Length: 475
Image 1 (tube, rainbow, N blue to C red):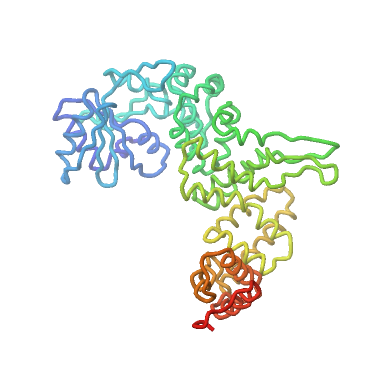
Image 2: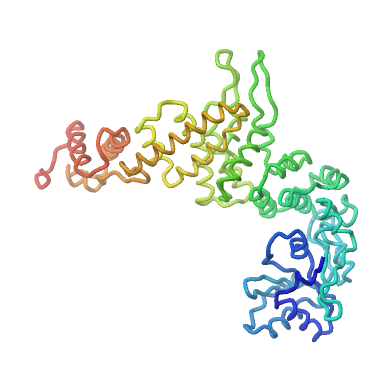
């Protein structure tokens, strides 16, 4: 392979020139080189390591670029970053690292390129391309990373036990790369992750979630979650999923393994959406089943109210992992809470009233909810699979039909509380809510159209029933 092809962008010549002006060796290292060899598209992130002062090179590069971009300097880490032509380039001096047991933040000292490659997490991320004018494009591969790329293998450059104990986040990264690239983790490396899994406790929740999100954004997230479970990491990160694992049997009656079912649902939904938060909803849609699981001699295993319990657990989980407690969390909560509604609807006669209620409650997220429910079909029986999908198509068609006619998605009742107060000359009271609720229910049931005049007449009727009198100016 001609590695110079990876360095065709003008920025590499400018870095090479800038390094030569300072008499400093520089190399492109890490993900950019790996992804070029794997033909994974044009990377927008470039890591440059300098045998010397990386910040100084960044400043020299900025001077030599026509647009003189601003250099962001991170003195604590000895790094600098600039943006050019939609590319983010990070510069760092080659370094040697040593760790203490209670932190993943190493003591750092200047080092050689070999030292820098030694500290890399995986052999496939230790590949470097020379940027010197004399050896431009030469590959440096001290740990046979190219061979590991060819063999689809995740392997650490040094002893995996030390690598993962030093920086336990690398365990998550190993699993994330295995998922993204569909690679295998070397056996010794996998054993080392299992041995050191408890060390994940020293990693911040934010960094763990970053890796979880990348696993969820992969083409087949189940690869990562199965590895997290196999290595023992999952019990420290998402014990709610571990609680779903296993099959209980009483009097010959069993339930399905909701852990493996969940991973099937996540893979299914990942084929149909890039929405990270909908993928989170798929991952968490059944977490309420563990605390609500009961056995009844009459009906067998039940999980009554697992959607409501699960939606409450979503908040606790997001809070524990320091994930956003904003509209993203509320979206996942709503999806979990409503996850069975379309399934119930598809199994019964699809009435306009039921569809109106579904659309009203789901609002703008009704399409996402249907996508989640379709992903929830994991039966291996082809007849059942076809039947469920046909039923969901009927529901989807009905949603379009009802929405076009009745406009109930996010609708506000045509009569406001202020108008009720003016009509009956009353102050804020319980009766106002009762009248508004009656109007809403009548529209959702299809008793009246979603129109002002029909709603107004019903308001008068309900007011009379409650003993309210219309004021003269409104009579």
